[in-house]
Amino acid sequence: MLHNDGVLCARDIMREPLVRIYPETPLRDVTRMMLAHNLDAAGVVDHEDCLLGEITCDQLFLLGVPDFFRQLKSVSFISEFNPFERYFEQESNKTAGTVMSSRFCALPPQASVLEVVFEMAVHHHTKVHVVANGKRVGVIDRILVLDKILNL
Image (cartoon, rainbow, N blue to C red; front, side, top):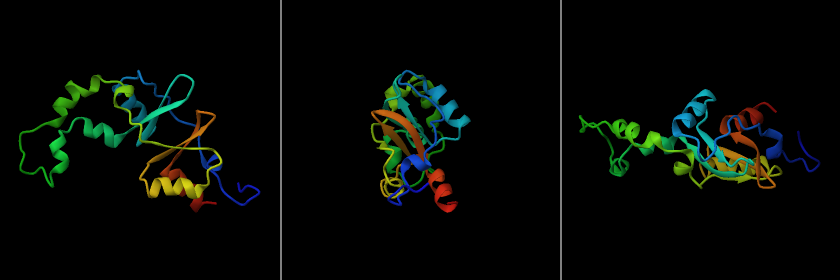
């Protein structure tokens, strides 16, 4: 739906959030919700739906991997290391609030689709959270943008 000025906006392509993740939600539940809805990223909100942070699959993978691994070109020389052992012992007992990132993208409903695409393509956000009056009112995933643009 184009507005009077001919601009397609975030509110025109956003969808309702599929999950509500609160800071106290255990990571085990977070991953189950993300899997059930095939989400690469999910917002963390308070009980009034104010956006507090975001959890991504990339973040969750990195929880169980030692810092030095990020510097390696390959792990083929390591044969007896199981990073998931530590992950399941320590990290899985955490909550969403302890691992969420404050690096997320929030735009108002009237933001143009060009702004949405810029955030996704240039700033590498997998999801844009649409926020009005401090509350999350919708979300936009990369595939949603592509579907809406290609099928106008």
